[in-house]
Image (cartoon, rainbow over all chains, first blue to last red; front, side):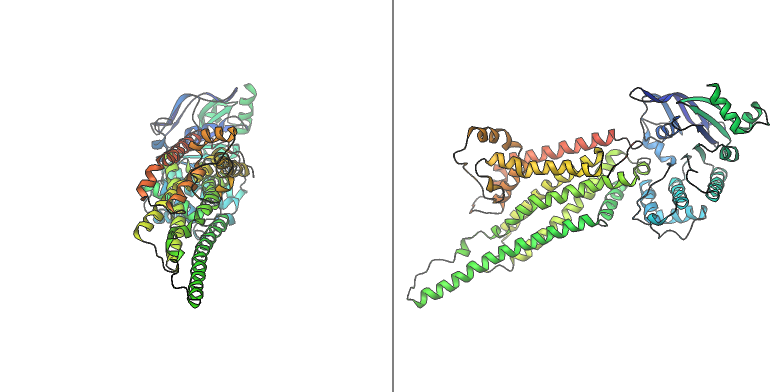
Length: 243
Length: 315
């Protein structure tokens, strides 16, 4: 649990004069479910994009599973799974065809067995031959999780995974995240707006404000530090207000 | 290697599910068949007229008749219309193939998933190019097959091994010519802000290469563009066209294509061997190779700078 799996050192992303992320120093340990909180435009998605090697940092360094995100991006990609906000697929292909293609690109040589195994794990079978264009938001999100865990990654990045889901979908997703963490031992890095979800799912939280990390601690310590009676929502707003 | 194969196979599979591709392919194959039919028709008509003339002359007591003109007509000349179809429709189809390759994924938003797989940008690009090559080779092979098969319906003449070699060299050259346009389509689909712009810019370049530049290069004989006959001498032109010809001839890919194509397909009686023709036209081949390498490097650079996170494609 104490082994760092994600580590950033003054990680910065700048667009012209605008800092999307400023000197982020962050450590996430193996086995954690890390909830990354922040308002819209705080830099959460930028952080995930940098850590998943989709973006290149302007300055600073970061490593995931011990590999540098710039110099060893392919090694990083082998060990991560990523579910973007509003995950998109080839809508004219079936769920199986989409997953098969992504599995093969992840280096899986027997995708059929792996896809069946993952869909059974997610309790989402019988949809393999349906085209993605016919799927609801919740179903797409579950296929999104499936594609992210096909290759059994060490770290799973989820960007606003509950966005657009109904309460039942949110509950199922929460159960899946906890199951992945407990049964598969995956470290989860989750960007979210929903403080209630963080309280129910995460073991550690970090708060980002205007591209700067303003807080990071375990959920238990956070609740203790800010008095047990305070809700996470109150704590979050007091942190943002103090900045 | 496995990733290359996976990307290339997916490229072919997804393109063969697109309607626009089938429409263009249908038009192209129809044109090839039409070209073969026109060639066959010219031969049979000439042969029939000759036959009727011989009977007429014999009936009127003329015993010495000239040889059948069909026999002196180069057999490959019956395929010369293919140069124009390849030059116009083939290159346009190649632009669409290249454009769809990346635009499809940009529009669907699936690139975020692809770019987090353990596949390098060069592998991704090369995989796509292999897929595109496979598609172009399939189309060209189909066209070549139609041409070769149709030659067996020609009266009196059939393709010899030297003719088949020339035909194969012509189709190979055509493949690289079309590949350049596919590269253009792919290049602009990487960084164009909208889907229509991604297609519009390479089409403008296609117009420049196919019409404007050859027009300037051929000066006062602009119809030579659609009449692929080797022009050895440009007649009596002004200083503007002389200047244009001087600067544009080395880089006029379209003109090179029609020129070399017409030499290979023996539009005029040409006794040179295939190798001799290629050696004489080596500069044309070098220019095409440079164009291909440059566009590949530009594609790779554009892909490196492509911001998958902030990409929004308009219609």
